[in-house]
Every structure is written in C-alpha cells, then in structure tokens.
Amino acid sequence: MFKKISLAFGLSFLSTMIHAQIKEMPLYEGKIPNSTNPPNTEKSAVDNNGVLRLSEVSVPTLTVYPAPSNLANGTAVIICPGGGYRILAASHEGSDVAKEFNKLGITAFVLKYRLPDDKFQTDRSIAPLQDAQQAFRLVRKNASAFGIKPDKIGIMGFSAGGHLAATTATHFDQQVGELADNSNVRPDFAILIYPVITMKDFTHSGSKSNLIGANASDDQVKRYSNETQVTSLTPPSFLVHASDDKAVPVKNSLSYYEACVQNGVKAELHVYQNGGHGFGLNNKTTQDRWFERLKAWLQANAWLN
Image (cartoon, rainbow, N blue to C red; front, top):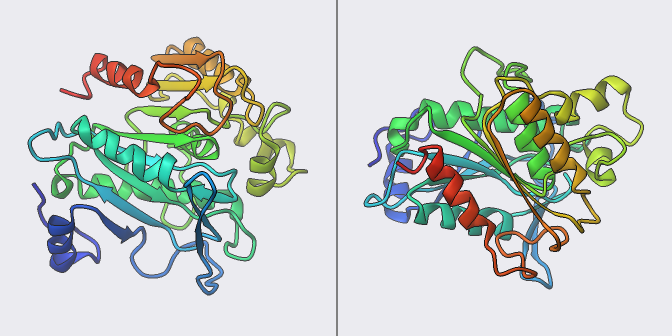
C-alpha cells in the first residue's frame, strides 16, 4: 500500500509506519517557519471527561491513520481538533474520529497544528493556516505512498478546528508564510462540526482573541470571517451544529451554509435541536448519529467509491 515517502522521512519511517500502522510525523523538514524557536513546552492532560487536551503546541505534526487495505478507497481527510485556539481536544475530536473514517476505507490524518501564541510565532494569526496548508502539500506530494488519490483529500474541523478547516477551504488561493508556492492546497471537500466560522459579533470570543486579538482591525476580522470568503470555488461542505450551542452560536454554520448556497457550492447542513457544544461523535440528546449522515453524504458525492 505504501511506497517511498519524500522529504526527510525515508525508509526507516516507512518501515515503522507499515508495522505500527499509526505514526506521528513532523509537519516540516528542518526549521519550523514563522517560529521564534522557543523550547518545546507542550503539555498533555486528560480531563474529567476523558478528553486528551494538548496545550502550548509549538511543534506541529501529522499523525497518519491508514485505511485497512481491504477497505481503502483512495479518499483521505485531514482532521483539525478544536479547543478555542487555546488547546487541542486531541482524542474525541481527533484520534477517535480518525478511527471511524478508517471503517469507511478513508485514510485519516490528525493535524496537531500550532496554537497561536506570540511567544512561539512571529505572526500568530497565520500559524494554524500555515500548518493546514503545509499538511495539504505534504499529503498530496506523498499521495501514492499513502495509498490515496490527490484529488480526494478533504479537511475536517471541530469548533475552532472548524474555523481552521473553513479558513483552509476559503483561503487556498491566499497561501501564507515562507513556504507559499504554486502547489494545490485546496481541500476537495470540507466537513465542519459545530464550527467557529466568523470573527464578527456572533463569533466565539475566545477563538477570536487567541487568533487575531479581541481588538483586531476590521481587515483582520473580515479576512477570518469565512462566511465572507466563500466563492464558487469553495469545496463542497458538510456541516453539523446544535441549536442550543451556547459557546458557538448556530448562526456560524447557518451563515456559512447560506454563503455556499448563494455561490452555488454543494452543501449539506444538519442542525439538532439539542446537543450543546463539543459533543464529538456522540450527541447524547438524540439517537441519530451525525456520522451516519456524513457517510451518506460522502457516498452521494462518490468519495466512498
């Protein structure tokens, strides 16, 4: 299934990945761009709900969850956990979801993106997007080695990770950072789960403050309000939200969906009457599983073929 991986990973990495199946790898070869080169102070902890929380992330990585060879269909998804751009909820919005995609024959990549922080980055506002765009460069460049198709790679995000996914889906023609080039960083589809979409009045204030600052300029607010950035080239999108979400108002998903419709972008939106925020794969207020709705959407758009 796997062939030679480019960049610095080499045959030893390939051998490890084949035997371990799941492997974390560096996102960048050598020096991390847009970095103040601080010591790595990343912390991990499991909260009372059993959620693995990563904080002070300054060294980005990509963890590969290969689809079983008997199910693999060539589709892949890059997953961005949420956490208000303050922490990463790495299990219930990351690894747990990756394993569900594997059951569909989809290879998943969990992106441990840098959390914006002036101590760690020269320009904190572009660091998460810079990492997401690099993830697309890396995955597409090595598509054959990963056993996937370069035109079947989507992005998924939860909460603030949903903001990053939506930003990646709408800013692919605005590459950021030192490694900007002519490579294709456009997702082929986007999956946005209770996403932060806007930096305007119905935003999640913590995400806004951490990414661009509570008193960001009007230009910055517009740039990162993704409902204003949708065009006819925005990839097909699938959205899930709960009406009673007090942390990230459902208007975030509604505004993005409306922008997709207005621009002729294929989109599907599922709004539950209850569920609150941060439910991951399991909205305990309903017997309906949104991941089954996602499976049907993926099938309808030929990404499970």
